[in-house]
Length: 549
Image (cartoon, rainbow, N blue to C red; front, top):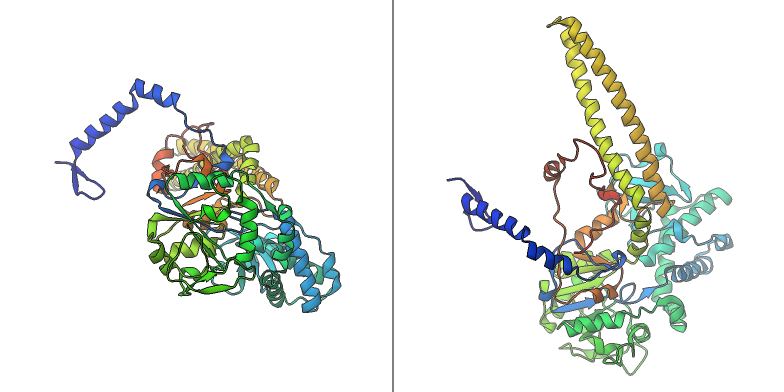
């Protein structure tokens, strides 16, 4: 008896499998059901506000939902905060590190930096790499490296996160340091004609930025005018309320100290929803000064914070976590034990790939959601260029087909030429075939050259239209960028802001699109590659994330 193997129950009767397939077709052909489905279209969620899925997640199974604060619950006005951090860092470099006053003339250029870049400290370059660690484009200072120089430096080099010669710009907080690094390299070498110690420069900038964060000088300015630097999302409170109403417990887990956390969260949430007069009413547990990523692997105790003071003083070590109280420090193992929720029953939402997402994913079974603030702009841009992106996908499919046809005809020419040389068969007929195949090869080669030129021009135009220096966030050439690959690998879900949960039921099933490996795609595409037309599948490299049904 023919059989196939089911996922876990051993052999399955082939006849039963065929009957099951027939039942499935019957369901699909049920006209009454089709009318019901057409009449019930579900909520119309704008694409930039959707939650995108890398791994299936049954929200009904999540008991506890946690949030980072900075760039997660608190969405900053990027350029305002970046410029403030940039100016304060420059001031410290001049006053405390001895850098020349000339660096104050370097303007901040928001467009020149994006999350996911790497700094090559040895050579003084900014790099964008693909998911395999290969460098796709690079700048030395503000000068784009030409292809020959790029190949010479990085042709045989794979950029690895653990290599100390490279620094990854993986947080929005780090954008100013990348821009300043490139600007100072450029100033020293072009204008001041002074050798630049690019390794020391990076260390000095990193120390200066760390200092303005650590000594609270940056946060002191933000606290004086929260509205200037933090976007007050009117849907944040209702989204958190919806989660609580759906039976979820919520927690806050942030590296910010209590005094700053209280100021920001009060601004965002106090009085927004009548049922929650204070921001603390939303959360069952509040942990500040968490020291992520150490929180996920360390053994620091939980300390209770004295909420009557504004100096982050503590009352002592905590033996339990209680609603209404605030804690600092702590560790992952103790958190799971004290909250009674562990593993896949916990969803943690954050913006930092390493501190919030990657580290929690590697050391725990928590489910993860990454906040990617930049995605709204990228989706809106891709939508505005939909026609070009669709055309590009079709041309690339044609390009692949033409490339295959060139190879086929070259092989055939070689075969015919050898037969002519050996005088095998009707030589005159073979010579006619040779001339006809050569004419076809020339025609296909010409079309391939034209397609390749079009692809190069259109792809460069689409990418440069989003960012003239680096292209799209999530792609580098035809591959995912390293940033895109990290989001895909470590975030179960990703979305542009926390308030997007307002559009979904707390019982929602987040389903990821079925992924096909290349050998599976070959079968799916075989019918499409015969005759090229508008039905060609869109290329993933320039496609907006899959919409949630």
